[in-house]
Image (cartoon, rainbow, N blue to C red; front, side):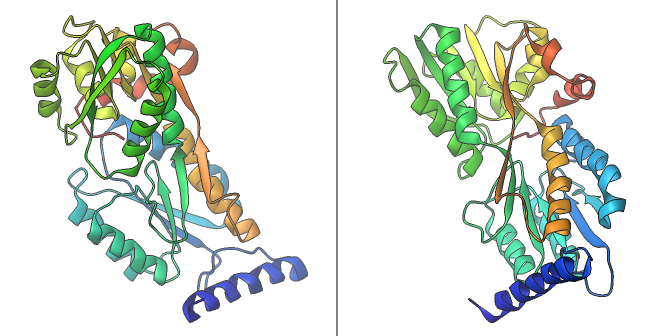
Length: 330
């Protein structure tokens, strides 16, 4: 074990012993203060998906930050999903010597290198919504994306009666969450020879590209499946009812398209719970010197026009129209 990691482990062990023997709290070590400083860097400042994660963090933070000695700051880039701006925010927080960084996972090399620098300085790293599989010790909070993809595949079978020519649209290559969803979907339908999955096309989280792919339909598909939210959100903004270009449309996150009837159904991720669990797990570390698990999966549900009334919260119904900007969601 490297000397720096040994010293960090030693500090944590000492803190736990203090908690047991002296009655004080074990937690993330902070020089000269009892306050654990948490910085959350969200990639998007006006999208309903991330608004719900932010709301979960704020609600849970209000309940726990005083009792656990936690100060939470939420930052966002000036331009949505701007990697250089997010890297700069990370560097500022490393210089400020915060104790915890909460980020969306991203495969950009400079982004990962900056997170590794933070980790080497003893800053705890929590990935929310999207994981970084290759990263050293960290906590992931979000959807089990393989199982979500498998659920989507099972619903594809149900909706199409096991027979469909499917156009697959994803966000960008290299994102582990999207690759896991694709793997789960493929495994779900592998025993259904009349379901043909086309090659994955990438919209690069761009609404205009989504619509171009939607109308070109080079593979003669009768069904379209979006593996991330931008596609469904774009369709939701373009059509207020079912369009006859495809027999079936399935995807992720696009509440409003389901409510309007433009989309058959979507995998609903529990974004509010992702935010709440971020704070809960930091509180666990402060109290116990460790997280409850290295991976915390949040719930997913199949959402349709028949069941959305019983599944969506008031906040989700409020934010649903704000997902119509074509903004990138995972």
